[in-house]
Length: 64
Image (cartoon, rainbow, N blue to C red):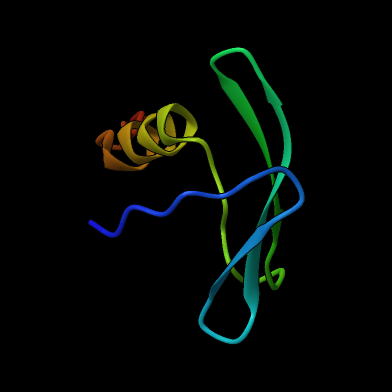
C-alpha cells in the first residue's frame, strides 16, 4: 500500500484520468473530491460491499 500525506487543496493523480483532492479536514474526518471518468465506478467501501452482496445473491425463480 502506498501511503501519502496531503494538505487541504492538494491532489493525488492516479493514471492519466483520476484525480483525488483533499477538500476539507475537520477533526478526524477528511472530505475528498474525486474526479474520474463516468465509466469508472467510485464508491465508499461499505457501499461497494453491499453492491457485491446483492450481485452475489442467487436469483430466485418462481414457477407459475
